[in-house]
Image (cartoon, rainbow, N blue to C red):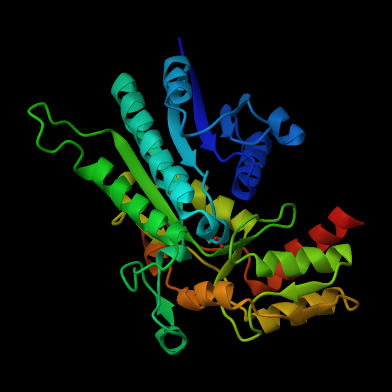
Amino acid sequence: MRKEVVLITGANGEIGHGLISYFFDNENTNVLALDVMPPDKELEKMCDRFIQGDILDNMLLGRLVAEYEIRAIYHLASILSTKAEYNPETAHKVNVEGTLNLLRLAVEQAGWQGKPVKFLYPSSIAAYGLPDLEIKNKSGKINEDEWCHPTTMYGCNKLYCEHLGRYYTKFYRRLAVDSTQSGIDFRALRFPGLISASTTPTGGTSDYGPEMLHHAAMGIPYHCFVRADTKLPFMVMPDAIKSLLLLEQAPRENLKQLVYNVTSFNPSAGKFRDIVLEAFPKAEIDFVPDLSRQGIVDSWPADIDDAAARKDWGWEPDYDQQRAFTEYLIPAVKAKYS
Ligand code: SER
């Protein structure tokens, strides 16, 4: 008999850390973790098995099908927006071909199991692309169907993979004589910038938020790469994990769409600095905008509308701006670096 597991790709990343810790602390879930980087030792202990390997390695994925009964896939591996711009073709391979490989794996698994395999996919505010700052400032909360004209390779990849998820769920091999459902139950979240107290992101463009906080806590000066008036939606990691789990557990019939916005608060970078300075009065934070990265952030929405998630599966963040900083981020980063 093959062992029943949940497969988590990109396990070493920020969301991977949060999700694996949650499963370890709260649920009797066997985690099969995959990451291209060597495992973080603490994290490895929380997994049933941690494999260092590449989602582009089809032989490896084939072996996983043979060995495990994978009931759900959290496909977290990807190359983030800033890093992807330095090598767009490699980013495309990892972000799109990697996702396609996992969708294939899910089809095979569903076939063997005779039941749907859930495919949880973190998409992003990068899937949006607003043409200029004036429109961004005028647009207010943006819903899932507006302004889907991404301007980064990462954003294009995320939006396209949402479409792939829809295709595999609803239209897979639609002309085949023996056409049957693929068995994939694809569910995606468009995350805002995520902030964790225990890890820092690598290669993203919303990174100025978490970087400002962690630098202040470590006593290292920080040059913020966007203007003080720059606004993006954000959410803390415990809420990101909560949203993934809630969406995974939602009855399929309640889900009117395959892709949902989720968010919590949206301070300007200047406000972010004020809050950090209140907690760390000696922090040195100034604004030295990098025009290219600023351009990316200016094309992302200042706020997103998560009404559909609230209505369909009861989404609500536990941490608004006040609670996020006072009850989670500030005490936890102080403890981490003391
Ligand atoms: N945090 C991501 C990035 O900045 C957006 O999803 O690339």
